[in-house]
Image (cartoon, rainbow, N blue to C red; front, side, top):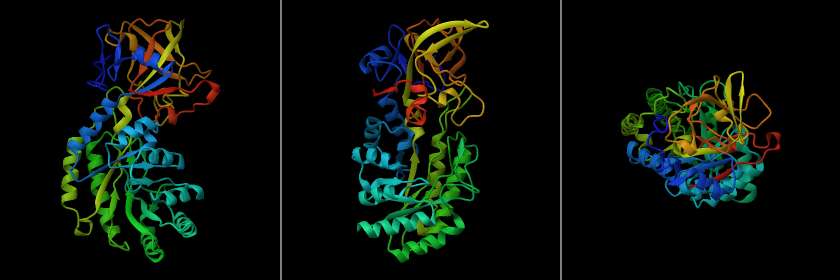
Length: 409
C-alpha cells in the first residue's frame, strides 16, 4: 500500500509493518485519542506542502490558507504560523482565525450569504470583507457607520472565464459567487463615495484542478482582469487574491500537480504585469493543497461477512465523517481513495474486500473491491487524503452516531 503513488513518500511503516503517522504507530494514536473513528493530521506533511509551495512560487507571492478546508483549531494554528494570511467563510471561522493569532489585517472573509451579524463581527474585528454583491456593500456601509468602525472591503469578482478541468467551477457565466465584471465599475465608484477602505480584488475561478496549463491560463487571465478593473478603482489596489484551484491526486491514475511549472509561469506573468499593479500584493489562496494529503481517517473493523461471494469489512465509521471518500461529495463516478489496513501497512494485498460504514444506507461505501492483507475484526482501516473536507464537510449527525475524534500528530 505504501507504494501507492498518491501517498508516495508521505507515510511509512515501523519494524512490525504498522502505519506510522507523525512518527507514531496508528494504534498508539488511537489509544491516545481514546477511540475510533479518528482523523489524524500529520504536521510534517503539512510543513512539506508549504515548503514546496514556497520553493515553487514567486518569492513575493503571498500564501493564504482557506480555513474551510480544515477548520480544526490545532491545524489552523499550525498553518497560520507559516503562511501570510487566512481566508474564512463564516463567523465561526472568524473566531477560529482570530484564535490562531493571525493578524486581523491578513484575514479575509468571503461567502455569498453573509448575515448582518457576520458583517458586523467582521467589521468590528477589522478583517477584510470580500464583497459579493451591491446589496452586501450597502449593508456593510450602513453597519460600519452604525458601529463607528471602518469597512475594509475587497470586491470578489465573478470572471467571464472559468478554470477548465476543475472539480468545482466557481467563475464564468451566472454564478452565486462574486460580482459580474460589468457591475464592478459602479461598485468601485460607490466605494469611493462612501469612503470605504478599498483593499483590492478577489478572483476565484475553480478548485481541485490537476491541469497545470489550465491553472496557468486562468492566472494569466486573472492578472489581466485585475489590471483592467484597477483602472476604475478609487485609489491604488493594495491586494489581488488570485484564488487557488491546486488539486491533489485522490484517485487511481491521477498525477500530482506540477507546481514548479505553475510557479515559473506565474512569475513571468507577475513580472510583466501592467504598471498600475506594480505595487499590488498578489495572494495565492489554497486550502486542500496545503492540508489534504496530511490526513488519515482511522476506523475499526467491527464485523466481517461474506455476501454473494464478496467479502465485506464493516467499520465503525462511514460517510457521516468522510463523505468525500464515500463518493457522495462532488464526484459523479465513485472511485476509491487510497486505503490500507493500518496494522499491516507494509504487507501485500492478498484478499479483495469491500469496506463499508456502519450506517443503514447503501451509500455508505468507503472502499470497493480493494486489495488488502487478510483483515480481521479489530483491525484499523486507514483512509488517506483525509486532511481536507473531511469531518467538517460531512453529515456528522446523520443517524445519531458519535462524532469522529481529531488529533494533530
